Length: 68
Image 1 (cartoon, rainbow, N blue to C red):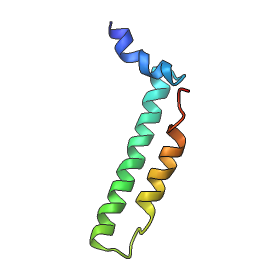
Image 2 (cartoon, one colour):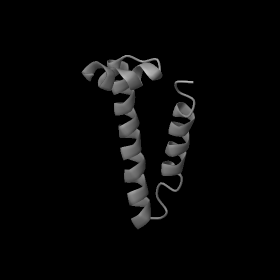
Image 3 (tube, one colour):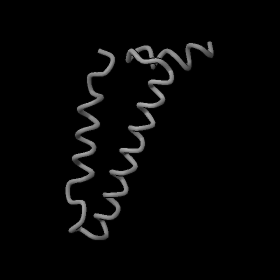
Image 4 (cartoon, helix red, strand yellow):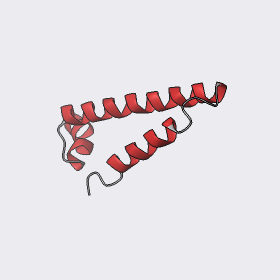
C-alpha cells in the first residue's frame, strides 16, 4: 500500500521517486519565481511584464504530454 502511494505516479511518468521529487522541486521553484514576478508586477507594472506568463507557458510545454 505505501509503495503504491509513493511510486505509482512517478512510474506513470517514467521516473523514479527521486527523479520525480527533483522535477517537482524545480517545478515548484519556477512557479514561486513566476508568482514573485507577478506580485512585483502588480505593484510596479513596468517590471516583469511577461515573466509570469512566459514561465507558466514553458512549464506547461514541459509537462502536458508527460506519461503518455
